[in-house]
Image (cartoon, rainbow, N blue to C red):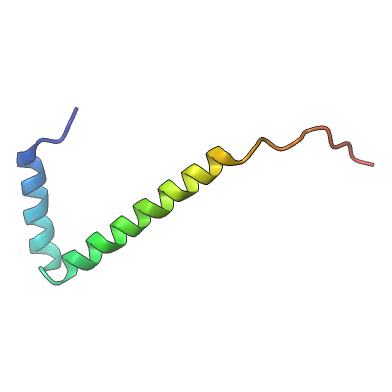
Length: 58
């Protein structure tokens, strides 16, 4: 189930009403940074080889 353009507009209007026009750019910036950090961590997780399980305790 996808969110349509009408729902996105309604959500944007509600966010503007709740937080005000000055807080929205800050929120969008922090949301973009969080997304980039998540994608960076996800890519790093894919690149790491699995840990060796041949280690035996003494």
